[in-house]
Amino acid sequence: LTCYPCLPPHPVSSALRVRSSTMVVYNFKKIATVPTAKDFIDVVLSKTQRQTPTVVHKQYNIGRIRSFYMRKVKYTQQAYEEKIARILDEFPRLNDVHPFYADLMNVLYDRDHYKLALGQLNMARGLIDRIGKDYLRLLKFGDSLYRCKQLKRAALGRMCTI
Image 1 (cartoon, helix red, strand yellow):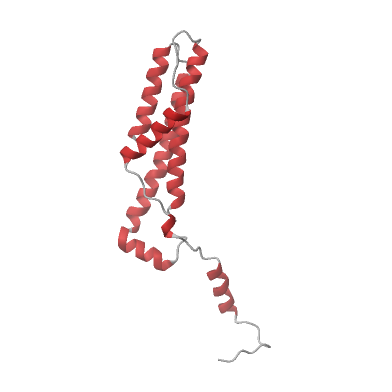
Image 2 (cartoon, helix red, strand yellow):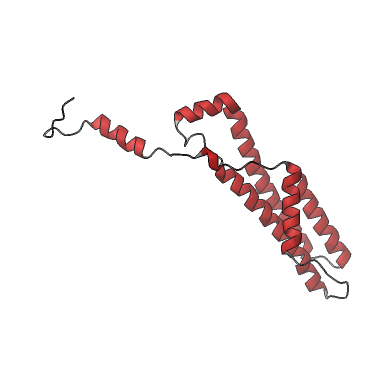
């Protein structure tokens, strides 16, 4: 094979070279295992319990009680959002990986099922975000410790059942 330095490179080969240099190299080993639903809920709720204040008294003024429960709901919402976003970011987009790996994933896991699962996770993230915002709006008008506590329980319960 001889190389002719006076000839310009062939346009097709240079286009292929540019295209192959933009191909995403993906490391499949860095994908962490996805926890089961029960483990996922346990991790998020225990993190909420550890990272937010835990004691509120009925003699506190209502503004302080509201902010206590609003902080718990907002923190839980953010914890769910972080966890789900991390899972979605770790898994590759089938359109971005090399065609060999895309075909292999199609054979092993079924492309449609894979895309459906990632779409459902993305939908769950949006639903949890909306539930958190709705209950924060309701908590702003909570008039007693009992009502605020029940709204917090309802919010966390709904987030966990999605």
